[in-house]
Length: 296
Image (cartoon, rainbow, N blue to C red; front, side):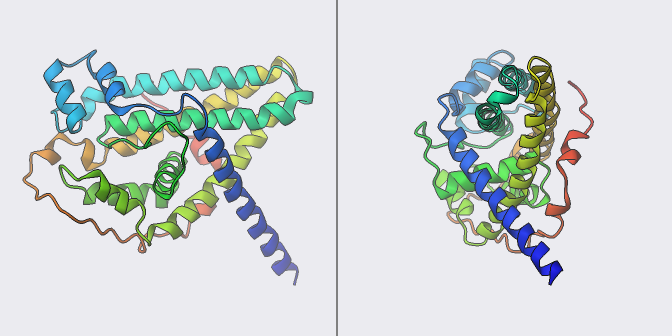
């Protein structure tokens, strides 16, 4: 009987964490700076290192398809990560200054800002490594496709195995010039919903731990600013680095992938039902924090 009560309490906590993640995601999507325009971003960043013809082709197709290697993108990717890390750390540190009395206001706002910059950096990395536009517009609309897409990418940043497996499946199933409508179909395939639901639960649990750590950091004015900024830095940057490494290893980022003849398909039917969900909830946010960051 006691075990059953504990199990029910745990289930309630998990459900609450999942709903909290969705709430934060929706709030983050309402931030005015959330959307990264793919074409503008690629043109600005790639023009620093590559000629106009290469940049134009990268925008029309993908950087790898334009002949830009993962190594050639490394400095840009690191710069994007460092830039977003600096911004979110500064915001978090500023939110820590008021101290304990303002925690009820600053902690939720800080978390929304944190995930806002998470969404920004994942867009930048995705576009560098071969993915097309992730957000449809700047209205903050969260339809199923956008929700699933963001949940999967954020899950991969947290090191959720099922999230990285989904990204790998999609990347390995894509052909050279797959229409966006087919990508949309893959992200709303019936078998993806149980996987996304599980990923959202795991993110929600990890997010709750991040919120608590941030709250502790904010308890003391001034000192709280340093602590809060430090907590944000140690979580945000490893998450971005983790995603960069995974995306860089996928075929969409591989120049050689586009040299092989492939037939473009009018359909895409990816079955996600075989993805193992068993050990995701055993992972801890410390797994992300303890990751060694190299090549800063």
